[in-house]
Length: 430
Image 1 (cartoon, one colour):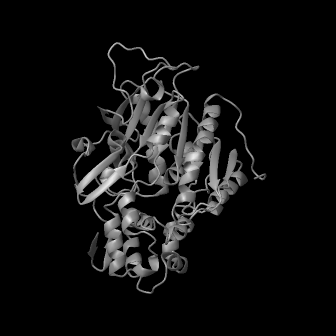
Image 2 (cartoon, helix red, strand yellow):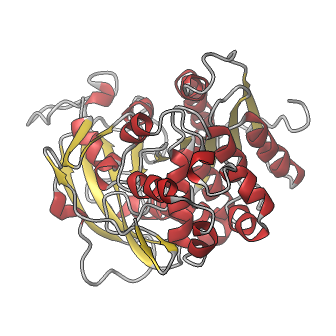
Image 3 (tube, one colour):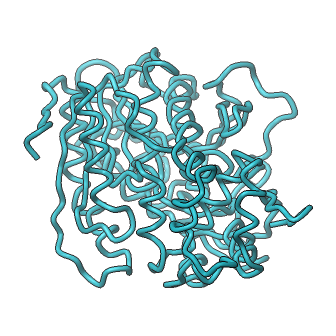
């Protein structure tokens, strides 16, 4: 991160040396982007971690090799970034080799990733190839844990597309938890998928959105923006797991946790989206705070967790107050945080919210409030409460475990939407 004129300036993503970086040239956009959002720029096949290689002449059936018989492509498409600028976004498209056995064309599951980090080597379209994408200068590693979610949908025979979101892999800073940029990256990927060579989903596939944590916020925001931004997308349902609908409440919960450094991701993303916020923030930061923002701008979640394990933001401020205390006392900073709130626009399609009440990173009360806000506006919301008891609070266990234990219910909920089953809604009863 650079400091100029006494104000925080958002870091500019730079090239990073990597010992196993897949296809680095692919992530450079062309000088001229295609017009419009949701346009396919380019694709490139790659070997998906855990998948069988293609076997010439083999005919796979749906009850045979299953999800491990899948072709993978990294893709680049156009979208609109956090400053309302045209951008190129990368992602992954996974095409099952087995013929689709259900009615109509093959459905599409569009996934948004949970927190990966801010550095380019964290991009899921890279870690899906190697599982662990290692960077050597400076040292770092990105882990492909979102493959678990992808394979769960592939097992149903769906085509799967996962976005890297703005700035992961591609030039520029990752717009971490930016409501509109994240939503547009999801919706534009849904627009792009039918254009991908080899896709058999047809021009208007039944589409579902799924994500957890940061990804849950992205798909929740996409469900909100869908009617206005991309109404042509045939969206039939969304599953948002532990979505950070209230950014300030989430940052306060994460403060002092094992992944406290994600606060650096959020502040970096806010300053990049709203450069005028830089001077507002800088007057509260000490040199250690500026160093934390600079470090996190070039890290994946593993490095961030190690370096900033159980750190509290009051050590990074000139006053000794926490980031949350400062934000609540400064109306200007609060106004920027409030721009990222999810729940003020009603989705027109069914939504499932998974809310772990003892989540030690993304507080359960604010995801419950998201459900209430949408219900009050007439949305069809199924609120699912995860009551896993608190375990070693602050170590991310109560945040991570429901992601895994709730995956089966998420996939079934979305499968029912694809099959046309009437959507459950329990507003006022949970």
